[in-house]
Length: 228
Image (cartoon, helix red, strand yellow):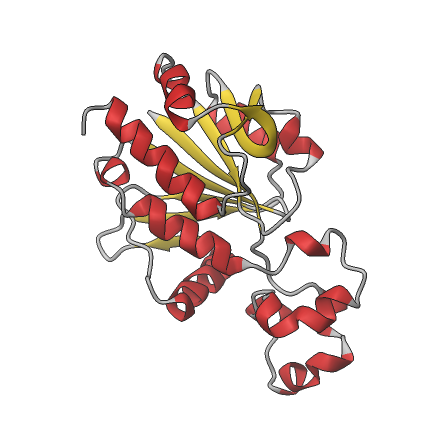
């Protein structure tokens, strides 16, 4: 079983220091609470960059996670329940993706689903199947050590040793419970907590590839090894 972790995902509700920014007066006047709004650089860019938000260059891009999940959950690997998917957000929230989940293709519907999850902590189907589960204040290291318990953790980053996907997957295939970590943010590198949990870091290209491309190519190589 392969474990895929999307780490430091740029998914969060609006921080209060952003919510109070003068440029967001219309949002405040609408009556919405900050916990009912996803931080999104498309709409909140000026407030983000002028509010001295920590690591603001990594934040406000929930669309990245949406695209990554669309790619991962549409694969034969996921549909045959041969990969487990987890999301670790920049605010130490962990989302467990249920088996066979179909993520909304529309971003607006995805946004509504995530806000519902943040509020209620679980999304359950009509027949009682757990689709999504969110845990608050769960560090990356705790998730790895207590939830996944992998044999080996491999991270993919431009800072890593150059190695192609085929080589990385062949290495992982020798293990019973391997884990791969891919960043869910627009720029920058993994936080120190994440780096401390990664056993090996590989770079699979001399180009800086978008995260959803890395997910797609990784899972495709894994499927080839499994003779799909």
